[in-house]
Image 1: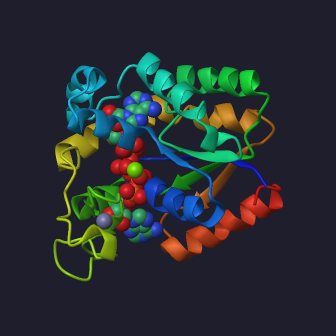
Image 2: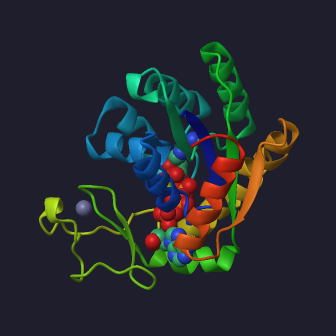
Length: 224
Ligand code: AP5
Ligand code: MG
Ligand code: ZN
């Protein structure tokens, strides 16, 4: 069955962690605009050069660019059976653009999952986050450390060295949180109004408990 899910929440709320699990379980592509943008920066593409300073300072990249990469990604064949949008939309203009994209595709979202959590907890989580640049696996030095310090433990990654994102310094995280509260939080109302699409999940629970709750929501809404 198809499933079209938006996962919403502050920086460090656990969007990527849960989206990866859902993608693995259901086979829907995990579309993280942050991951796509980081890849552009890493490969020094023309888009990467335009957005690097926004990302580095914790600001949003311009809406038109974010919408452009999502339209292009959704046009790929693997999105026909559904997708998980992580980090998009994150402003009202982006949400309106997504409404248009969905209408053009004759599709509707099944649900918007909002992971809720306190700002202070997020700062600690992001200070301790490490990610594998090879497979994208997300670790946490406190809650979910790798088996060998500093290295990805997936056999296919062959000990790839884990990285700390350059926007995870405390000052930048505080800027990202401010942007979240000012620009992204209004989407909560936007999705509450749209057929009650919004489902709140306590992002402070364990990753397993959160995943279980999300699966319950998907089942109830007929997306599995
Ligand atoms: P993006 O990459 O989307 O970053 P973000 O929204 O700030 O969110 P994060 O990826 O930091 O956190 P997450 O919620 O995925 O948490 P995670 O699962 O990793 O965007 C980065 C930048 O790109 C933006 O600032 C902007 O510049 C640009 N951008 C991206 N999209 C854009 C758009 N649409 N428009 C404009 N600009 C855009 O978990 C965090 C940590 O917590 C990990 O260590 C994890 O192991 C741990 N953890 C996860 N769950 C739990 C749990 N339940 N309990 C304990 N620890 C947990
Ligand atoms: Mg993420
Ligand atoms: Zn890896």
